[in-house]
Amino acid sequence: MLHTPPITELNDRARDIFRIVVETYLEHGQPVGSRTISRFSALNLSPASIRNVMQDLEEGGLLSSPHTSAGRMPTETGLRLFVDGMMQVAEPSAEDRARIEAQLTRQGPIEEALSAATTALSGLSACAGLVMVPSQEPVLRQMGFVPLSDRQAMAVLVGADGSVENRVVNLPAAIPPSALIEAGNYISASLSGLTLREALGRLRKEIAAEEIALDRAAADLVERGLAVWSSDPTDRPILIVRGQAHLLDDSAQGDLERVRLLLDELEEKQEIARLLDSAREGTATRIFIGSENKLFALSGSSVIAAPWRGNDGRVVGVVGVIGPTRLNYARVVPMVDFTAKTLSRLMR
Image (cartoon, rainbow, N blue to C red; front, top):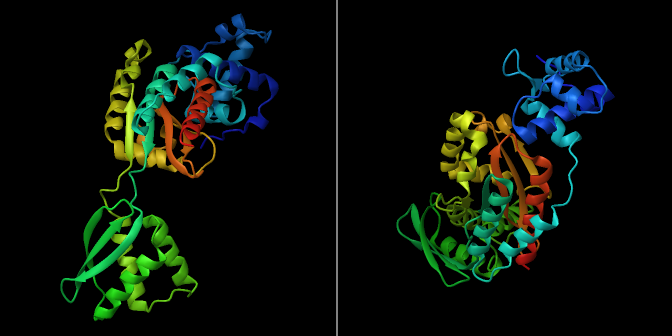
């Protein structure tokens, strides 16, 4: 198994050559040879010396050579090392900021702003733009339970917006009819105004702390009633994708199979949404490179994503881009971060 050295273990010469290889590859999309480095860098090293260092970097798992006579290109491990330890990230240019803000200051429904955000990111990054928003979760006003049989009841949920939905709930054995009334009263009195997820979380916390004013049978019924909505398979995130055509630019002509795989992956929106959902956990922009995520193990694609927030400060969704691992990370990362912050300001 290859030992991949941390950036601190590379000497100055190796670090400089590695940085030049990565930056040149990300700019041009072609393997970088020793003669190119010696000709255009200020290292004052011979091609032979540069080749020796590149060979060491290849043995360390940071560079690879697609053909025996070709130059080197960064591996996914090398890209991760570069992104985490060497990349110089600057603020988006004034022009990029202006284009993003121009798209996001349009009047109209939030869906239009989200679509505009993905379009702006796609155009500026030459990737496909992505934005994910959880489907609207109902806020409870009240809930009641209507017995259907000894083992089933109809849970009737009234949302804060006046909507009414029904679900069939399986009942515990020998539950008394009074427990159905008690459970409905508790939900309406104690959990009204909360989302289903928040209500379920509070219920479980109160049960664990033995602070709930319900008997076990009624508490179990409340949990079943809330869970049947929280785990509803129709409650799927909304994913907007724009700019897939950018993935078919001139640089993709020699790698059409990879692009075809990526386009197929974009059709599996549910899997993409799960990946983006993991970016909701952090406070900063996340970078997923190639096979670090099994979804992109075949296409070798990268995703850059950042969470955006609603007017209460809580994370609402995620915005980002998807494209080949040969992305201009230093430019695209701050661009995605700026778009997320602009969306957050728009929600206030």
